[in-house]
Image 1 (cartoon, one colour):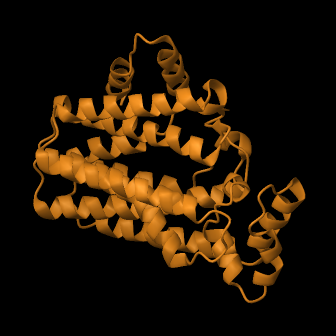
Image 2 (image 1 turned 180 degrees about the horizontal axis):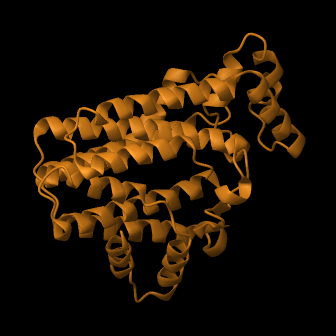
Length: 309
């Protein structure tokens, strides 16, 4: 992963001062690097070639960074990983250019080693991310979203990228078709659990550790699984209804919504849903060859449900 980080920094060098500063600020915020880790770990199930996989791992992380920069613009998020977002510090125009720059550098780096077949899967995945984000944007401030629609949106905007990372590492390492299929399914279920856990932490996490204010999604009219379950509850739907569709909720509104999602069982039901996807991901791992990276993936899945940020 150290080599991946070094390659990311090398790839993102620019002679343009504003881009250089904005990217430097982004890199200093760090990140979990889960997606590149998935590429490398999946590659261990086949003929592992670091010279081939490290550029792919670096490119998926740069691609992820690009989606976050654009996502923060759309959501008007002021903080990310404890730092000001690019658009908050540098302006929307610079943020758009920075996101575009990251996309081009990611695609250029990936194009050097990726197979044509996986390139096609990449474009399908990026399309799914865009469609998921647009679907989320269009449903803002609307309380009629169902659990099914939420899960479909989550699959597109988050889980499919994890699935692609696992597939990419395995496929480019010459793994058997069955192994690639299992790893892809692992990534998909891991990604679903990851996003649901992220949505839970938006209500119950530590704002300082999260690097952004609590209830950020609710503030922006994005109603995630805990709110959806609360809206569906016969005893709580009428209580939370006055707080749905509010464009500028105050601290009292946010506190009440947090209280209602807890009292309604919305948080517990969301945790059980995350655990269900996590259990599926671990079940899939048992069908994979017994190599060292399988244990690392198992540990990552275990850490996921206990994460605080």
